Image 1: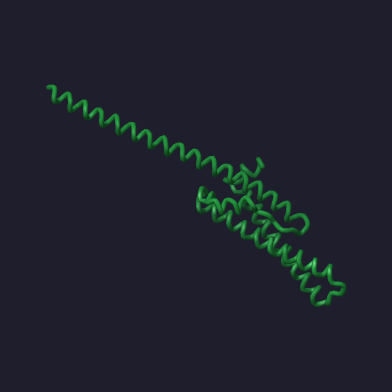
Image 2 (image 1 turned 180 degrees about the vertical axis):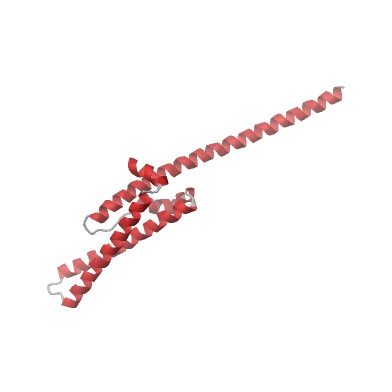
Length: 162
């Protein structure tokens, strides 16, 4: 009988050990999940704030658009915390913002060149106007994209708080 009780005791020890290891792994996963959710929440709040700021910049005078939060998130790999659908939507919006920024810089450079030049041939002035019109179209596309993404349920709650 002593041998049977030793076997039962051994089985009990193994079960307790496995249960402890399983519990430790589950707690570790829970801690990682909570950390990832916190990072995702901060990232979305910062992106929503940045999108509102960029939208304000687009409605003002022509200037280079800064999107440091997005650039930092790309460089750090923090965008990997977002589901693919959200990542694609955010990337699409920031592509339009970058296009508007590039066009804005072209407009700024052209205007500075015209300001430095005393006489501007009419065909160059006309091409500058076309450049300005192209910027306005790109700007409107970016603003529309920003408005649409800020209405997404997963981002709108952070957009209102920023």
